[in-house]
Amino acid sequence: MRIDVLTLFPNMFSAYLGESILQRAQSAGLVSLQIHNIRGYAEGRHRVTDEPPYGGGGGMILKPEPIFKAIENIAAEDQQVKPKVILMAPQGRLLSHAVAVELAAEPWLLFLCGRYEGIDERVRQHIVDDEISIGDYVLTGGELAALVTIDALARHIPGVLGDEYAAERDSYSTGLLEGPHYTRPEIFRGWQVPEALRSGHAARIARWRREESLRLTWERRPDLLLTAELDEADKIFLMELAQETMVK
Ligand code: ADE
Image: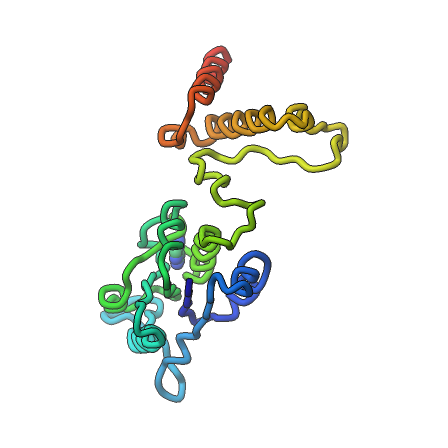
């Protein structure tokens, strides 16, 4: 998979993308990440990338010319595939597990990071294919949002996570929140690892994990239970939780 990013601040990406799982994914050739500076496509001695808004008002708006030029130049590198151009903006559709899985199936993504007050509307209308927001708050720019989106989708590219981190076990893949984890020591400051985990009994451990996951989801995100896949044992456990709640 190929991912390109267009930004005014390329340095913001190198530290995060150069470490850990995302770095390994690039070294292994599973994903090719390229960061481009919008300023490099701006004309003139000053390479101006923004201007005050037409009709007045505060802030600065990103100009269309350097953005169109950048996207067209990058897209021309491949004659067979076209990048899906995604603008990071608070007006976009909300990032979710489902959106991350959907994006991970694309062969080529190009993220455009907005800054300042906004971006010329002609960019949004004529060259952007999709708009994504990472939440109902306004960031100072789309860079962090692009990093969050790239991180969330990269985990779903086959081979990026080792078996030990299988994405299918994550919260949201199972439709439930993930339960607690423990490691050694068995007793830390008097707090003991739960008995089921120490039992060495695979089926008991699996059942304990499932029930903790159901309990946490029941307590914090009961809405997820409406769409999660539940078997008979899960339903009986949830009935017990419901009864406990009523007794309390
Ligand atoms: N740019 C500014 N705020 C944003 C948000 N919430 N999501 C995506 N891009 C943004």
